[in-house]
Length: 518
Image 1: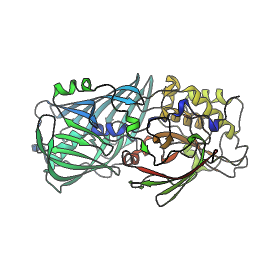
Image 2: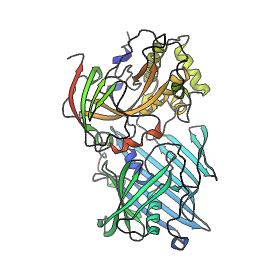
Image 3: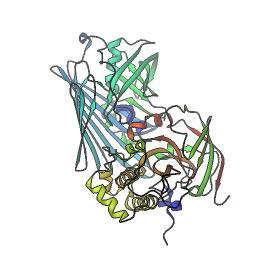
Image 4: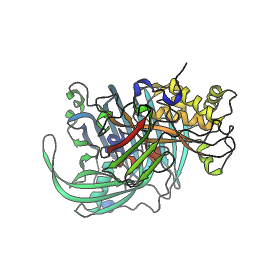
């Protein structure tokens, strides 16, 4: 007999990588979230065109580091051509993800106006044989985007009022230079983050001047606090506007180095680089026995600002910084008949997105094949959870997943399990949404909480009563999830940026827990 979906751990109970590595990517390309924001005002040129200094090609190199360990490099070229700048930004990373060595390459090509606002850009991400690319053209009233993933093409538009600037550190350094670098200077710029097409303002505050130690020299540079959507990191900008150092609170940083050192950087790594997932794990003050069977967990969250997080509601109860989590099972034996026909406020969780293609014929067909003639929503969730858990082979990849790609590739981490499950649930007529947070694991040297992703589904009884959002983890084949799942944020990629304020800073004190053995 197959184990119940409620307590069937998935492949050695391995939590998967959802956003931990985005702290690294943020060093160059900004922080990864996808949003549709209107720019409230026209971007203003900071300084006049007489201050534009690049009349010939500029080339820069940086090394990326995880502690003392080099993990990659960045190569930047800025070339003036007539009334435009052509920018090429290439990043190569070698990451250890739970013992799996992952080589990731990101390339950004952009055409910028002389005021550094965007005209066109192309972005490509390749990791473990999985590719993701996008092209964005800035029109008078919108950014037109074509996303290519696998053999699929997805088109969308983001409305704007005027062209934004590119959210990458070289552009920020140039705008600070134009504004006149000095302690106390503050500027805000409307920016477009290319990795996931976020539009919002970045706020820059120049702090004190510091002596920065590079590999072969020391240079004076201004320390600048860079805040984007509520989370901060730091860059150091020299007097000529060049970014010579970047640092993220998660502990990752970048330094200016020579071309020769950059190209030889990864060969300097002795053995495996430090495991990224374990490095960013949140250590627990006590061991939790049989975590996949925990029914109740009480923790204290320390060292973070809780603003912007989704900690309260459904199976979680927040009092100050004390959080209680319950493994909440529906208290009815039969759910509503599919498709869901309840309140309009849940209809948005049935709609397709570019990531959750619940209206795609392939997704609809697969959902029908899994469920057959079954119309009970409660039973349908169990079947979909078990099917995705068995279908998607665990593999750490650094990419931005979508359901069609996962259905085709049949592999991925927790974010891939979650996006496919969510699409299949919506295609079946079940309101579903994605969640990111932490889950406890004792499978590694560090026993503690690891970053993870799962889903929530909205269910009621047959009469439409006793409704609520219930936790579903297709990676662990759990419905409902165990109570060591700490939800931090609800939504798709565009909603996840507040999580970056947590990475490398959150501490968790386990106060109490209960499971089948207690």
